[in-house]
Length: 176
Image 1: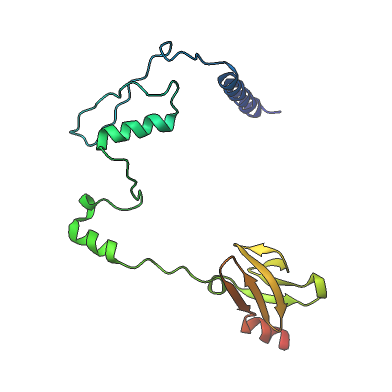
Image 2: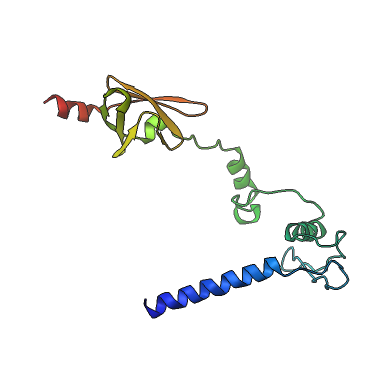
């Protein structure tokens, strides 16, 4: 065993011991025994920090403390799209264009996958799709292969049925 592997195992052991100690050592039931950490949230560079008031429950979770901090800083607990570019970065006119643009169309299963061969062998039938052998009943990308017949494989998801045809180039190669 190399020295590097020994170091990784030692770090893993320390982490496991720390996790076990954190979970097994009982915490005080009296909230007065543990001082409440002072948490502050800044809105913008010019915003002032405000400490949180004492928690209402004896031992609030981290998510409750973060929720209270957000409520105090913004006055509301709404959600926002974290992937949406802020208006300050692109300007209000461009923001209206971005918000008004239609969502991109999700490509269908038969558009994103290539069926190159079918195996018709009773209960062991299958399809070679994107270089992977998929037997009837198995799934790929959330679509289950339902049946294979005459150059077509039928895939089905929870709300869609896709008919994928064997590529013409593959059929031509077999026919020659």
